[in-house]
Image (tube, rainbow, N blue to C red; front, side, top):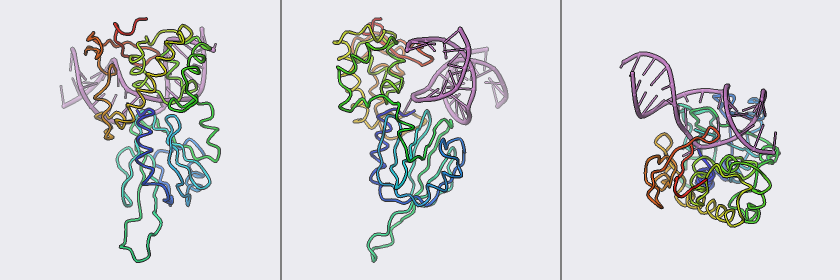
Length: 278
DNA sequence: CACGTCACCTGCGTGC
DNA sequence: TGCACGCAGGTGACGT
């Protein structure tokens, strides 16, 4: 489910809680969740690692550890839940890391030091990598859309270098990293561009419009702490501000024309037929 | 290289 | 109620 803004929201909320904690043990309940290395080595190598930093690259959550990096991809239904104490696994928990905080002042009141970090993933598509070389996993990703590398000039040139439909190209993580089905539809509507328009047909002016739309859409998503749905509520409320996504038949916020749903590359796609001409 | 199809999984809403 | 079907914020492996 989560796209860039949801993963960014998770990373920001976890960082102050996790940095400095030691991983005592990993419990794996669905072996295929561990993409790398083997489950056996994963459990062995992660023990004793201290969490130094928590961040994000594309849709990957990154935990920088003493000797490794732990990369977590939530795919469609993954979620990260931090709970105090040592807990029994909840339904759909695929991995639980048992964490311990360092002792604070010697005579302080006994604070709770044990935590459980659960990777909960109904559909089992999510994956976790423990590696000393994160570049091997994330190396082929395109630029971060919120970084300085992502400029209107870069986007314009990159679009002209390909001959692709806009929507599948924007979903291609090796082209640009972090957009998913929601934020792509929202960005295209904001840019007034049709999802099937060919990338090399865009003028520099339209490319600049798309660039600005992507930035604004992602920034708004982050500002609203991402989008929440019935089945995974995370506190964000961007779902209340969708312009087109999941709004088939409802009025376009710009012109009032009913939003239409089409299928592009097997993905549900939402457009305003008036604002987004092919 | 671009694009279509299927696979990986579970759960929910809908219609018969 | 039971059941089939379509659908879900992702990605990777195929084939043409």
